[in-house]
Length: 335
Length: 287
Image 1 (cartoon, rainbow over the protein chains, first blue to last red):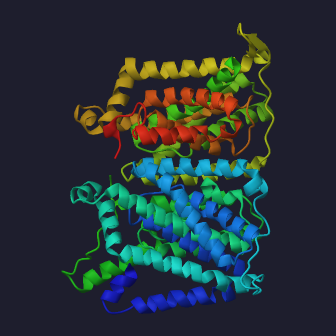
Image 2: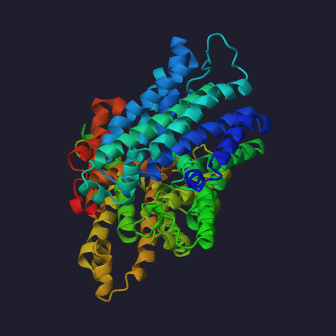
Image 3: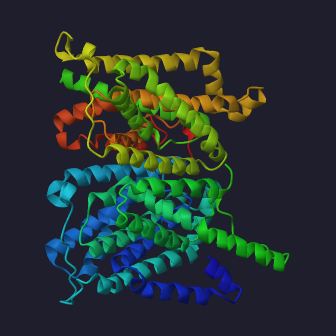
């Protein structure tokens, strides 16, 4: 959004976009390539969660079902059919969307905190199913040795696979951006700001919410599929509730309703976890939980949100009378 | 069959105790406490530490651990949660998520992921003849105590002055305040009480369930489903749904064992389809 506003002001937008693309391209040179791919996947996952939280006003605490469910589906397609890996990833994303249909249909009947509870419960159900259905999911061992087939190309090296997986992430981010900027996205924002009013204006609110939920799930599924491909395995951890929480945490750390902020949150959290893991510190929850608490208590705007806020107030000081036209995010206002 | 039903009721007792704490906290503070499972786990570990390090019996732990953890809850509410209650309830939810992660991993760091042994109290190690079948005495005790606690809380809520204030503050906080009642004064004790209830359930669970750092995390999400089934914001509904879900899952387990863990979520889906506000919830309480 900052990019769009800067673009409207005639500066910065293309520059930021170029900067972001450049960062995405050089990332595996800067850091360990598997970690770079993790960051890219989580960035898309966070953007998908933000599509719901920041632009539709629904906090899903159950997106692990789509990320992890797609990881299983992607892995199964690749393992059993030998099809090229892009087909497996698209298949996984389609599976996530399909799974989101009944879950979303039931969940959008509630909103606010109840929506969070119900999505969390459905994701837990997915977890239990994955845990019990050992013949298909491998239970606690997960699916291992998922091949990366692409017309005989050698993608076994994680450095080269980063560039094979990156297009999916970029396309996913572009789709999320297009959704937000589309008329459909504007309706979503109006539903977030005032659902009753949107309903009174004749928009079928629940149907819009459901569609946003399914789209968000499909993008999460794509991210989860690339992640599973990158690691060569799909595990129970992907469908566990802490995975949902981690995506939400990245969104808040980056800034709710900023779409790109999640990428910053993802980069920070993944890097931190990698650092802790190499340092031999297994109980990462102590650190990530503390960050979560501090951000929720003191830093609710997030990084991108704070930058945007500072920029907006500076511009306002420079040109009085020009007020930011963007609606404030409802999540930040006192109930 | 009857024995299975009894198992279900005992399992339901834990759902009911946890759902009860969740419901009173949510009613009074508007916070859905994701760390509730962590407090349950801490209760069980409290009993374990009391026995292991201090040689205190189960009975002492049952009396001592819940108030101590309740006190910790009071401090927590005073220091942090207080700042979040005026905001969107989602922030309280996210805060307690972070808290659950911290508590869980702190315990994991100290004791590892394997389960700690905790013996049944000697007084209850036998079985009881219930006429149609014999049943472990400890399970009978758990069921009886849980029902007793739920009834006592119910009586306090409906028959005493304190209960009336809490219920009024839950349903119409503004109006209650306008009538000259200091609602804020009751917020902290209610939170502490809810935490103490979770810890109480944890101590009860120690002798019959595996005491490990993850024991609360999975349980609490199931309890969320129970609360949704019972009715959002309904104290009575939460307790009733707790026992009912325990019973139905146990019987379901008898006929379709594969569904033992997912049954509660299927029930939740059915309730959402039929009555989105839950069996005992008021329609106006949601949206």
